[in-house]
Length: 544
Image 1 (spheres, rainbow, N blue to C red):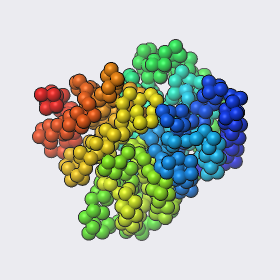
Image 2: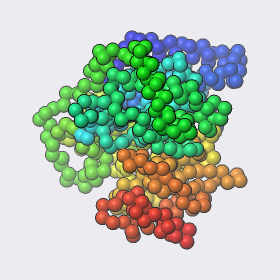
Image 3: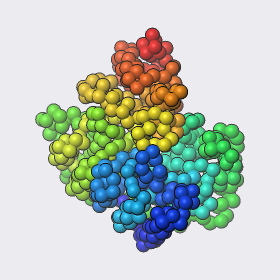
Image 4: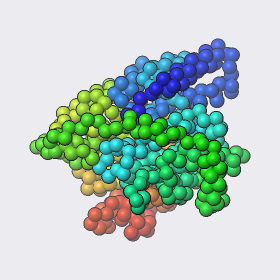
Protein backbone atom coordinates (compact mmCIF):
# COMPACT_ATOMS: atom_id res chain seq x y z
CA UNK A 1 0.00 0.00 0.00
CA UNK A 2 1.03 3.61 -0.51
CA UNK A 3 3.33 5.19 2.07
CA UNK A 4 3.34 8.96 2.63
CA UNK A 5 6.57 10.67 1.60
CA UNK A 6 8.11 13.72 3.27
CA UNK A 7 5.92 16.06 1.21
CA UNK A 8 2.72 14.30 2.31
CA UNK A 9 3.82 14.26 5.95
CA UNK A 10 4.78 17.93 5.92
CA UNK A 11 1.36 18.74 4.47
CA UNK A 12 -0.62 16.98 7.22
CA UNK A 13 1.68 18.29 9.98
CA UNK A 14 1.17 21.86 8.73
CA UNK A 15 -2.60 21.34 8.74
CA UNK A 16 -2.48 20.19 12.38
CA UNK A 17 -0.51 23.26 13.43
CA UNK A 18 -2.87 25.56 11.53
CA UNK A 19 -6.01 24.05 13.02
CA UNK A 20 -4.57 24.01 16.53
CA UNK A 21 -4.24 27.78 16.31
CA UNK A 22 -7.79 28.12 14.94
CA UNK A 23 -9.27 26.02 17.75
CA UNK A 24 -7.36 28.05 20.36
CA UNK A 25 -8.83 31.24 18.94
CA UNK A 26 -12.35 29.77 18.86
CA UNK A 27 -12.11 28.63 22.49
CA UNK A 28 -10.87 32.01 23.72
CA UNK A 29 -13.60 33.83 21.77
CA UNK A 30 -11.34 35.49 19.20
CA UNK A 31 -13.22 33.63 16.47
CA UNK A 32 -17.01 33.49 16.42
CA UNK A 33 -18.84 30.31 15.39
CA UNK A 34 -19.73 31.98 12.10
CA UNK A 35 -16.03 32.65 11.44
CA UNK A 36 -14.94 29.25 12.70
CA UNK A 37 -17.47 27.14 10.82
CA UNK A 38 -15.73 27.13 7.41
CA UNK A 39 -12.41 26.46 9.13
CA UNK A 40 -13.62 23.43 11.08
CA UNK A 41 -15.40 22.02 8.04
CA UNK A 42 -12.10 22.15 6.18
CA UNK A 43 -10.89 19.73 8.85
CA UNK A 44 -13.86 17.36 8.74
CA UNK A 45 -15.38 18.70 11.97
CA UNK A 46 -19.19 18.99 12.04
CA UNK A 47 -21.44 20.31 14.79
CA UNK A 48 -24.29 17.82 14.99
CA UNK A 49 -27.30 17.45 17.29
CA UNK A 50 -25.46 16.62 20.51
CA UNK A 51 -21.73 17.12 19.97
CA UNK A 52 -19.01 17.64 17.40
CA UNK A 53 -18.49 14.86 14.86
CA UNK A 54 -15.08 14.30 13.30
CA UNK A 55 -14.87 12.54 9.93
CA UNK A 56 -11.47 10.98 9.24
CA UNK A 57 -10.36 10.28 5.67
CA UNK A 58 -9.42 6.75 4.63
CA UNK A 59 -8.31 7.26 1.01
CA UNK A 60 -9.75 4.52 -1.22
CA UNK A 61 -10.53 2.59 1.97
CA UNK A 62 -7.02 1.21 2.53
CA UNK A 63 -5.42 1.05 5.99
CA UNK A 64 -2.52 -0.69 7.66
CA UNK A 65 -2.65 -2.18 11.16
CA UNK A 66 -0.82 0.74 12.78
CA UNK A 67 -3.36 3.20 11.38
CA UNK A 68 -6.27 0.99 12.40
CA UNK A 69 -4.93 0.67 15.92
CA UNK A 70 -4.72 4.47 16.25
CA UNK A 71 -8.37 4.69 15.15
CA UNK A 72 -9.25 2.35 18.02
CA UNK A 73 -7.18 4.37 20.47
CA UNK A 74 -8.89 7.60 19.39
CA UNK A 75 -12.27 5.97 20.03
CA UNK A 76 -11.18 5.10 23.57
CA UNK A 77 -9.41 8.34 24.41
CA UNK A 78 -11.59 11.00 22.83
CA UNK A 79 -14.98 9.41 22.07
CA UNK A 80 -17.26 6.93 23.86
CA UNK A 81 -15.30 3.84 22.96
CA UNK A 82 -16.44 3.26 19.39
CA UNK A 83 -16.15 4.55 15.83
CA UNK A 84 -18.61 4.54 12.95
CA UNK A 85 -17.43 3.37 9.51
CA UNK A 86 -19.26 5.16 6.69
CA UNK A 87 -20.38 4.69 3.10
CA UNK A 88 -17.48 6.93 1.98
CA UNK A 89 -14.99 4.35 3.36
CA UNK A 90 -14.20 6.80 6.16
CA UNK A 91 -14.63 6.64 9.93
CA UNK A 92 -16.60 9.11 12.05
CA UNK A 93 -16.46 9.87 15.76
CA UNK A 94 -19.76 11.22 17.08
CA UNK A 95 -18.89 12.57 20.55
CA UNK A 96 -15.86 14.80 20.09
CA UNK A 97 -14.91 17.78 22.27
CA UNK A 98 -13.66 20.77 20.34
CA UNK A 99 -10.70 21.15 22.68
CA UNK A 100 -9.54 17.61 21.82
CA UNK A 101 -9.55 17.99 18.03
CA UNK A 102 -5.96 19.26 17.65
CA UNK A 103 -4.66 16.26 19.63
CA UNK A 104 -6.76 13.87 17.53
CA UNK A 105 -5.44 15.33 14.28
CA UNK A 106 -1.90 15.09 15.66
CA UNK A 107 -2.43 11.41 16.52
CA UNK A 108 -3.72 10.81 12.99
CA UNK A 109 -0.82 12.69 11.40
CA UNK A 110 1.58 10.45 13.32
CA UNK A 111 0.40 7.52 11.18
CA UNK A 112 -0.11 9.39 7.90
CA UNK A 113 -3.81 10.12 8.31
CA UNK A 114 -5.92 13.27 8.35
CA UNK A 115 -9.43 14.72 7.91
CA UNK A 116 -8.63 16.90 4.91
CA UNK A 117 -11.48 17.36 2.39
CA UNK A 118 -13.90 15.11 4.22
CA UNK A 119 -16.40 17.98 4.09
CA UNK A 120 -17.03 21.15 2.10
CA UNK A 121 -17.65 21.87 -1.58
CA UNK A 122 -14.48 20.21 -2.77
CA UNK A 123 -13.33 16.86 -4.15
CA UNK A 124 -14.04 14.45 -1.31
CA UNK A 125 -12.30 11.20 -0.38
CA UNK A 126 -11.95 9.07 -3.53
CA UNK A 127 -13.45 5.63 -2.98
CA UNK A 128 -12.50 2.34 -4.66
CA UNK A 129 -13.36 -1.33 -4.89
CA UNK A 130 -12.61 -2.76 -1.45
CA UNK A 131 -11.36 -5.99 -3.07
CA UNK A 132 -8.83 -4.04 -5.17
CA UNK A 133 -5.54 -5.87 -5.68
CA UNK A 134 -7.04 -9.14 -4.45
CA UNK A 135 -10.13 -9.92 -6.54
CA UNK A 136 -9.99 -12.81 -8.97
CA UNK A 137 -12.12 -10.89 -11.51
CA UNK A 138 -9.95 -7.76 -11.63
CA UNK A 139 -8.54 -6.24 -14.83
CA UNK A 140 -6.07 -4.17 -12.82
CA UNK A 141 -5.71 -2.73 -9.33
CA UNK A 142 -7.46 0.69 -9.43
CA UNK A 143 -5.79 2.04 -6.29
CA UNK A 144 -2.71 3.54 -7.99
CA UNK A 145 -5.09 5.72 -9.99
CA UNK A 146 -7.03 6.56 -6.83
CA UNK A 147 -3.78 7.58 -5.14
CA UNK A 148 -2.85 9.77 -8.09
CA UNK A 149 -6.28 11.39 -7.80
CA UNK A 150 -5.69 11.99 -4.09
CA UNK A 151 -2.46 13.80 -4.82
CA UNK A 152 -3.99 15.82 -7.65
CA UNK A 153 -7.16 16.82 -5.80
CA UNK A 154 -5.74 17.64 -2.35
CA UNK A 155 -5.69 21.42 -1.89
CA UNK A 156 -6.34 21.92 -5.62
CA UNK A 157 -6.82 25.72 -5.69
CA UNK A 158 -9.25 25.75 -8.62
CA UNK A 159 -11.57 23.14 -7.14
CA UNK A 160 -11.56 24.15 -3.49
CA UNK A 161 -14.87 26.02 -3.81
CA UNK A 162 -16.94 24.04 -6.27
CA UNK A 163 -20.69 24.62 -6.65
CA UNK A 164 -21.25 21.55 -4.45
CA UNK A 165 -19.37 18.61 -2.92
CA UNK A 166 -17.81 16.25 -5.46
CA UNK A 167 -17.32 12.49 -5.18
CA UNK A 168 -15.22 10.12 -7.31
CA UNK A 169 -15.16 6.30 -7.29
CA UNK A 170 -12.91 3.92 -9.22
CA UNK A 171 -13.12 0.19 -9.90
CA UNK A 172 -10.94 -2.32 -11.73
CA UNK A 173 -13.38 -5.07 -12.71
CA UNK A 174 -16.73 -5.59 -14.38
CA UNK A 175 -18.21 -6.27 -10.95
CA UNK A 176 -18.99 -2.87 -9.48
CA UNK A 177 -18.35 -3.06 -5.74
CA UNK A 178 -18.09 0.73 -5.28
CA UNK A 179 -21.41 2.04 -6.70
CA UNK A 180 -19.26 3.70 -9.36
CA UNK A 181 -22.11 4.89 -11.61
CA UNK A 182 -23.79 6.68 -8.71
CA UNK A 183 -20.92 9.15 -8.26
CA UNK A 184 -20.17 12.56 -9.71
CA UNK A 185 -17.35 10.85 -11.62
CA UNK A 186 -17.03 7.09 -11.89
CA UNK A 187 -13.91 5.51 -13.38
CA UNK A 188 -13.51 1.92 -14.53
CA UNK A 189 -10.17 0.38 -15.49
CA UNK A 190 -10.71 -1.48 -18.78
CA UNK A 191 -8.72 -2.97 -21.63
CA UNK A 192 -9.27 -2.22 -25.31
CA UNK A 193 -9.22 -4.68 -28.22
CA UNK A 194 -5.43 -4.47 -28.32
CA UNK A 195 -5.17 -5.43 -24.65
CA UNK A 196 -4.04 -1.95 -23.59
CA UNK A 197 -5.06 -0.73 -20.16
CA UNK A 198 -7.25 2.35 -20.14
CA UNK A 199 -10.05 4.11 -18.29
CA UNK A 200 -13.77 4.42 -18.99
CA UNK A 201 -15.15 7.68 -17.60
CA UNK A 202 -18.71 8.16 -16.31
CA UNK A 203 -19.87 11.65 -15.24
CA UNK A 204 -23.08 12.90 -13.67
CA UNK A 205 -24.29 10.24 -11.27
CA UNK A 206 -25.46 10.65 -7.73
CA UNK A 207 -28.18 9.99 -5.20
CA UNK A 208 -29.78 12.55 -2.90
CA UNK A 209 -32.83 14.60 -3.88
CA UNK A 210 -32.52 13.83 -7.60
CA UNK A 211 -30.91 10.39 -8.10
CA UNK A 212 -29.24 9.79 -11.47
CA UNK A 213 -27.02 7.16 -13.10
CA UNK A 214 -23.86 8.59 -14.65
CA UNK A 215 -23.64 8.26 -18.45
CA UNK A 216 -20.40 7.25 -20.15
CA UNK A 217 -18.59 10.40 -21.25
CA UNK A 218 -15.49 8.69 -22.63
CA UNK A 219 -15.22 5.01 -23.50
CA UNK A 220 -11.44 4.79 -23.36
CA UNK A 221 -8.81 7.15 -22.01
CA UNK A 222 -5.07 6.66 -21.73
CA UNK A 223 -4.17 6.36 -18.02
CA UNK A 224 -1.45 8.95 -18.49
CA UNK A 225 -4.12 11.48 -19.47
CA UNK A 226 -6.40 10.90 -16.50
CA UNK A 227 -5.44 14.01 -14.57
CA UNK A 228 -5.89 16.27 -17.61
CA UNK A 229 -9.26 14.73 -18.47
CA UNK A 230 -10.62 15.05 -14.95
CA UNK A 231 -9.28 18.59 -14.86
CA UNK A 232 -11.39 19.27 -17.95
CA UNK A 233 -14.47 17.62 -16.42
CA UNK A 234 -14.18 19.72 -13.27
CA UNK A 235 -13.47 22.96 -15.14
CA UNK A 236 -16.65 22.67 -17.19
CA UNK A 237 -18.62 21.95 -14.02
CA UNK A 238 -16.97 24.78 -12.10
CA UNK A 239 -17.76 27.15 -14.96
CA UNK A 240 -21.45 26.30 -15.41
CA UNK A 241 -22.60 24.51 -12.23
CA UNK A 242 -25.42 26.25 -10.35
CA UNK A 243 -24.38 28.30 -7.33
CA UNK A 244 -27.74 29.97 -6.76
CA UNK A 245 -29.58 26.81 -5.69
CA UNK A 246 -27.85 24.09 -3.68
CA UNK A 247 -30.49 21.55 -4.71
CA UNK A 248 -29.47 22.01 -8.34
CA UNK A 249 -25.75 22.46 -7.81
CA UNK A 250 -24.44 18.92 -8.33
CA UNK A 251 -22.79 18.01 -11.62
CA UNK A 252 -25.57 15.50 -12.33
CA UNK A 253 -27.97 18.43 -12.81
CA UNK A 254 -25.60 20.15 -15.24
CA UNK A 255 -25.09 16.99 -17.30
CA UNK A 256 -28.82 16.32 -17.31
CA UNK A 257 -29.82 19.87 -18.28
CA UNK A 258 -27.34 20.44 -21.12
CA UNK A 259 -27.26 16.77 -22.11
CA UNK A 260 -24.43 14.26 -22.01
CA UNK A 261 -23.44 14.98 -25.64
CA UNK A 262 -23.05 18.71 -25.07
CA UNK A 263 -21.22 18.18 -21.78
CA UNK A 264 -18.90 15.70 -23.54
CA UNK A 265 -18.23 18.23 -26.35
CA UNK A 266 -17.27 20.94 -23.89
CA UNK A 267 -15.07 18.57 -21.89
CA UNK A 268 -13.27 17.40 -25.04
CA UNK A 269 -12.63 21.02 -26.08
CA UNK A 270 -11.26 21.83 -22.63
CA UNK A 271 -9.25 18.61 -22.61
CA UNK A 272 -7.58 19.51 -25.92
CA UNK A 273 -6.57 22.85 -24.45
CA UNK A 274 -5.26 21.35 -21.20
CA UNK A 275 -3.10 18.87 -23.11
CA UNK A 276 -1.14 21.83 -24.49
CA UNK A 277 -0.34 22.95 -20.92
CA UNK A 278 1.52 19.81 -19.86
CA UNK A 279 -0.36 19.27 -16.59
CA UNK A 280 0.03 15.50 -16.58
CA UNK A 281 2.47 13.97 -14.12
CA UNK A 282 5.34 12.12 -15.81
CA UNK A 283 4.90 8.42 -16.51
CA UNK A 284 7.62 7.74 -13.94
CA UNK A 285 5.37 9.13 -11.20
CA UNK A 286 2.53 6.72 -12.00
CA UNK A 287 5.09 3.91 -12.11
CA UNK A 288 6.39 5.00 -8.69
CA UNK A 289 2.89 4.88 -7.25
CA UNK A 290 2.10 1.51 -8.87
CA UNK A 291 5.25 0.02 -7.36
CA UNK A 292 3.87 0.76 -3.89
CA UNK A 293 0.82 -1.36 -4.67
CA UNK A 294 2.78 -4.41 -5.78
CA UNK A 295 1.40 -7.75 -4.65
CA UNK A 296 2.62 -8.96 -1.26
CA UNK A 297 4.78 -12.07 -1.13
CA UNK A 298 2.07 -14.69 -1.59
CA UNK A 299 3.10 -18.24 -0.75
CA UNK A 300 2.80 -20.28 -3.98
CA UNK A 301 2.63 -23.45 -1.89
CA UNK A 302 -0.25 -22.26 0.30
CA UNK A 303 -2.79 -25.10 0.56
CA UNK A 304 -6.07 -24.50 -1.21
CA UNK A 305 -8.24 -26.83 0.88
CA UNK A 306 -10.35 -25.66 3.83
CA UNK A 307 -11.33 -27.90 6.73
CA UNK A 308 -15.10 -27.40 6.90
CA UNK A 309 -15.83 -29.80 9.75
CA UNK A 310 -17.06 -26.99 12.03
CA UNK A 311 -20.51 -26.10 10.59
CA UNK A 312 -20.53 -22.53 11.98
CA UNK A 313 -17.14 -21.86 10.44
CA UNK A 314 -18.22 -23.41 7.14
CA UNK A 315 -21.29 -21.16 7.06
CA UNK A 316 -19.13 -18.07 7.63
CA UNK A 317 -16.70 -19.13 4.87
CA UNK A 318 -19.55 -19.62 2.42
CA UNK A 319 -21.02 -16.19 3.15
CA UNK A 320 -18.12 -13.91 4.07
CA UNK A 321 -15.05 -15.25 2.21
CA UNK A 322 -14.56 -14.49 -1.48
CA UNK A 323 -12.31 -15.86 -4.20
CA UNK A 324 -8.77 -14.45 -4.28
CA UNK A 325 -6.59 -14.11 -7.35
CA UNK A 326 -3.84 -16.13 -5.63
CA UNK A 327 -4.28 -19.85 -5.02
CA UNK A 328 -4.47 -20.74 -1.34
CA UNK A 329 -5.81 -17.33 -0.26
CA UNK A 330 -9.23 -15.83 0.44
CA UNK A 331 -10.73 -12.35 0.86
CA UNK A 332 -12.38 -12.03 4.27
CA UNK A 333 -15.19 -9.57 4.90
CA UNK A 334 -15.74 -8.76 8.58
CA UNK A 335 -19.39 -7.90 9.13
CA UNK A 336 -20.07 -4.86 11.31
CA UNK A 337 -23.76 -5.81 11.31
CA UNK A 338 -24.43 -8.11 14.28
CA UNK A 339 -28.07 -8.90 15.00
CA UNK A 340 -29.53 -5.87 16.76
CA UNK A 341 -26.34 -3.85 16.29
CA UNK A 342 -25.75 -0.42 14.77
CA UNK A 343 -24.56 -0.83 11.15
CA UNK A 344 -20.97 0.31 10.75
CA UNK A 345 -20.16 0.70 14.44
CA UNK A 346 -17.13 -1.01 15.99
CA UNK A 347 -15.83 -0.74 19.53
CA UNK A 348 -12.27 0.36 20.25
CA UNK A 349 -11.38 -3.21 21.24
CA UNK A 350 -12.89 -4.58 18.03
CA UNK A 351 -10.99 -2.03 15.95
CA UNK A 352 -7.71 -2.99 17.63
CA UNK A 353 -8.47 -6.70 17.16
CA UNK A 354 -9.03 -6.14 13.44
CA UNK A 355 -5.69 -4.31 13.34
CA UNK A 356 -3.99 -7.29 14.96
CA UNK A 357 -5.59 -9.74 12.53
CA UNK A 358 -4.43 -7.66 9.58
CA UNK A 359 -0.89 -7.59 10.97
CA UNK A 360 -0.80 -11.32 11.68
CA UNK A 361 -2.81 -12.77 8.80
CA UNK A 362 -3.32 -10.25 5.96
CA UNK A 363 0.06 -8.73 5.08
CA UNK A 364 -0.70 -5.77 7.38
CA UNK A 365 -3.60 -4.49 5.29
CA UNK A 366 -7.30 -3.74 5.81
CA UNK A 367 -10.03 -2.15 3.73
CA UNK A 368 -13.13 -0.19 4.70
CA UNK A 369 -16.07 -0.99 2.41
CA UNK A 370 -18.75 1.42 1.22
CA UNK A 371 -21.22 -1.06 2.75
CA UNK A 372 -19.81 -0.23 6.23
CA UNK A 373 -17.84 -3.45 6.74
CA UNK A 374 -14.10 -4.22 6.99
CA UNK A 375 -12.06 -6.45 4.68
CA UNK A 376 -8.90 -8.47 5.27
CA UNK A 377 -7.85 -8.76 1.63
CA UNK A 378 -5.13 -11.45 1.70
CA UNK A 379 -5.73 -14.30 4.16
CA UNK A 380 -4.26 -17.78 3.70
CA UNK A 381 -7.00 -20.37 3.58
CA UNK A 382 -5.03 -22.33 6.16
CA UNK A 383 -5.43 -19.36 8.54
CA UNK A 384 -9.15 -18.79 8.02
CA UNK A 385 -10.22 -20.90 10.98
CA UNK A 386 -7.90 -19.07 13.38
CA UNK A 387 -9.15 -15.73 12.06
CA UNK A 388 -12.78 -16.81 12.39
CA UNK A 389 -12.30 -17.99 15.98
CA UNK A 390 -10.95 -14.60 17.05
CA UNK A 391 -13.67 -12.73 15.17
CA UNK A 392 -16.35 -14.95 16.64
CA UNK A 393 -15.12 -14.34 20.18
CA UNK A 394 -15.28 -10.59 19.55
CA UNK A 395 -18.79 -10.58 18.02
CA UNK A 396 -17.46 -9.93 14.51
CA UNK A 397 -18.26 -13.20 12.75
CA UNK A 398 -21.88 -12.65 11.69
CA UNK A 399 -22.26 -14.59 8.40
CA UNK A 400 -24.57 -12.13 6.64
CA UNK A 401 -22.62 -10.48 3.84
CA UNK A 402 -25.01 -9.24 1.10
CA UNK A 403 -27.99 -10.72 2.95
CA UNK A 404 -30.92 -8.78 4.41
CA UNK A 405 -29.06 -8.47 7.74
CA UNK A 406 -26.15 -6.66 6.05
CA UNK A 407 -27.98 -3.33 6.27
CA UNK A 408 -26.50 0.01 5.23
CA UNK A 409 -27.82 2.85 7.41
CA UNK A 410 -26.90 6.47 7.98
CA UNK A 411 -26.69 7.85 11.56
CA UNK A 412 -30.12 9.45 11.08
CA UNK A 413 -31.91 11.60 13.60
CA UNK A 414 -30.04 10.08 16.53
CA UNK A 415 -27.04 12.21 15.52
CA UNK A 416 -27.46 14.16 12.30
CA UNK A 417 -28.90 17.69 12.29
CA UNK A 418 -30.10 17.23 8.68
CA UNK A 419 -32.10 14.05 9.30
CA UNK A 420 -35.88 13.82 9.40
CA UNK A 421 -36.17 10.35 10.91
CA UNK A 422 -34.15 7.80 12.85
CA UNK A 423 -32.33 5.13 10.88
CA UNK A 424 -30.52 3.19 13.60
CA UNK A 425 -33.51 1.86 15.60
CA UNK A 426 -35.20 0.82 12.35
CA UNK A 427 -32.08 -1.06 11.19
CA UNK A 428 -31.94 -2.80 14.56
CA UNK A 429 -35.60 -3.88 14.38
CA UNK A 430 -35.22 -5.24 10.84
CA UNK A 431 -32.06 -7.06 11.88
CA UNK A 432 -33.87 -8.65 14.79
CA UNK A 433 -36.93 -9.59 12.71
CA UNK A 434 -34.69 -11.44 10.24
CA UNK A 435 -32.18 -12.69 12.81
CA UNK A 436 -32.26 -16.34 11.74
CA UNK A 437 -29.30 -16.82 9.41
CA UNK A 438 -30.90 -19.74 7.57
CA UNK A 439 -33.89 -17.55 6.82
CA UNK A 440 -31.54 -14.86 5.51
CA UNK A 441 -29.72 -17.36 3.32
CA UNK A 442 -33.01 -18.64 1.94
CA UNK A 443 -33.84 -15.07 0.90
CA UNK A 444 -30.42 -14.86 -0.73
CA UNK A 445 -28.79 -11.64 -1.93
CA UNK A 446 -31.00 -8.82 -0.73
CA UNK A 447 -29.43 -5.43 -0.19
CA UNK A 448 -31.39 -3.23 2.19
CA UNK A 449 -30.40 0.40 2.67
CA UNK A 450 -31.84 3.08 4.98
CA UNK A 451 -31.52 6.88 4.85
CA UNK A 452 -32.89 9.25 7.46
CA UNK A 453 -33.37 12.06 4.95
CA UNK A 454 -33.35 12.85 1.24
CA UNK A 455 -29.58 13.42 1.24
CA UNK A 456 -29.31 9.62 0.89
CA UNK A 457 -26.20 8.97 2.98
CA UNK A 458 -27.63 5.46 3.47
CA UNK A 459 -27.86 4.93 -0.31
CA UNK A 460 -31.57 4.03 -0.14
CA UNK A 461 -32.01 4.69 -3.88
CA UNK A 462 -29.58 1.83 -4.60
CA UNK A 463 -31.16 -0.77 -2.33
CA UNK A 464 -32.98 -3.80 -3.64
CA UNK A 465 -35.19 -2.61 -0.81
CA UNK A 466 -34.66 1.00 0.17
CA UNK A 467 -36.13 2.94 3.08
CA UNK A 468 -36.32 6.74 3.22
CA UNK A 469 -37.22 8.50 6.45
CA UNK A 470 -39.31 11.66 6.05
CA UNK A 471 -41.11 14.11 8.33
CA UNK A 472 -44.89 14.01 8.07
CA UNK A 473 -46.21 16.92 10.14
CA UNK A 474 -43.74 16.28 12.92
CA UNK A 475 -44.07 12.48 12.82
CA UNK A 476 -41.39 10.14 11.51
CA UNK A 477 -42.60 8.34 8.39
CA UNK A 478 -40.83 5.77 6.24
CA UNK A 479 -41.20 5.39 2.49
CA UNK A 480 -40.49 2.01 0.89
CA UNK A 481 -38.58 1.72 -2.40
CA UNK A 482 -37.98 -1.34 -4.57
CA UNK A 483 -35.68 -2.01 -7.48
CA UNK A 484 -32.45 -0.16 -6.75
CA UNK A 485 -29.02 -1.60 -7.52
CA UNK A 486 -25.48 -0.30 -7.22
CA UNK A 487 -23.73 -3.00 -9.25
CA UNK A 488 -23.12 -3.53 -12.95
CA UNK A 489 -26.93 -3.50 -13.37
CA UNK A 490 -27.22 -0.09 -11.70
CA UNK A 491 -30.77 1.13 -11.22
CA UNK A 492 -32.67 3.65 -9.11
CA UNK A 493 -35.34 2.38 -6.74
CA UNK A 494 -38.91 3.69 -6.94
CA UNK A 495 -41.35 4.47 -4.12
CA UNK A 496 -44.15 1.92 -4.12
CA UNK A 497 -46.84 3.79 -2.18
CA UNK A 498 -47.72 5.61 1.06
CA UNK A 499 -45.26 5.55 3.93
CA UNK A 500 -45.32 3.67 7.22
CA UNK A 501 -44.53 4.04 10.90
CA UNK A 502 -41.35 2.47 12.23
CA UNK A 503 -43.08 -0.78 13.13
CA UNK A 504 -45.22 -0.68 10.00
CA UNK A 505 -42.20 -0.53 7.67
CA UNK A 506 -40.72 -3.65 9.29
CA UNK A 507 -43.99 -5.52 8.70
CA UNK A 508 -44.12 -4.24 5.11
CA UNK A 509 -40.61 -5.51 4.40
CA UNK A 510 -41.52 -8.91 5.80
CA UNK A 511 -44.60 -9.10 3.59
CA UNK A 512 -42.51 -8.12 0.57
CA UNK A 513 -40.06 -10.94 1.22
CA UNK A 514 -43.01 -13.32 1.41
CA UNK A 515 -44.11 -12.31 -2.08
CA UNK A 516 -40.60 -12.88 -3.34
CA UNK A 517 -40.37 -16.35 -1.82
CA UNK A 518 -43.73 -17.30 -3.32
CA UNK A 519 -43.05 -15.90 -6.80
CA UNK A 520 -39.32 -16.33 -7.40
CA UNK A 521 -37.96 -18.57 -10.14
CA UNK A 522 -34.80 -20.65 -9.93
CA UNK A 523 -31.70 -18.55 -9.40
CA UNK A 524 -33.54 -15.24 -9.00
CA UNK A 525 -32.56 -12.63 -6.44
CA UNK A 526 -35.24 -10.44 -4.86
CA UNK A 527 -34.25 -7.75 -7.37
CA UNK A 528 -34.66 -10.12 -10.33
CA UNK A 529 -38.12 -11.23 -9.23
CA UNK A 530 -39.24 -7.63 -8.69
CA UNK A 531 -38.01 -6.66 -12.14
CA UNK A 532 -39.88 -9.58 -13.69
CA UNK A 533 -43.26 -9.29 -11.95
CA UNK A 534 -43.32 -5.57 -11.16
CA UNK A 535 -44.78 -3.65 -8.23
CA UNK A 536 -48.37 -4.88 -8.32
CA UNK A 537 -48.03 -8.20 -6.42
CA UNK A 538 -45.91 -6.51 -3.77
CA UNK A 539 -48.33 -3.60 -3.35
CA UNK A 540 -51.28 -5.97 -3.06
CA UNK A 541 -49.54 -7.87 -0.25
CA UNK A 542 -48.30 -4.78 1.56
CA UNK A 543 -51.33 -2.50 1.29
CA UNK A 544 -54.12 -4.98 0.54
